[in-house]
Length: 108
Image (cartoon, rainbow, N blue to C red; front, side, top):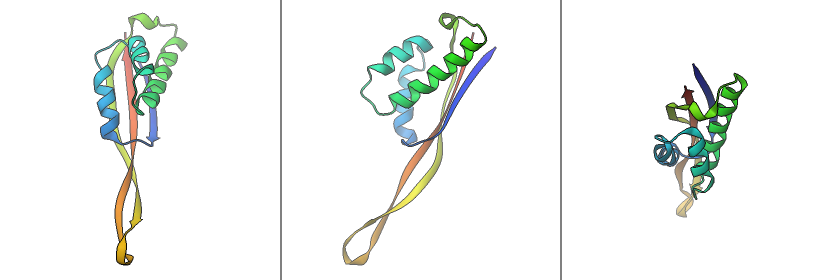
């Protein structure tokens, strides 16, 4: 049986989120939550909340959280907000504020 949780439009870049997701991919979900709680990265907090949501979805079906493991951790790019930064001579430089979609699948 599979248990999923998703978070969309998280305001952090996909590259930074993947760095944190790759570090916990091999751990058990409960161990991953412990690891993320002490990790000094901004991406750790939204990733931990999605893992906690997936564990809560599994608990709703009366599954022991100790037997669960990650089947998938998908960190996908979301839309980008296009912004402008004023520079000299009346010009502007464009930049993007990127967003991320996270999908976590747990299995027995």
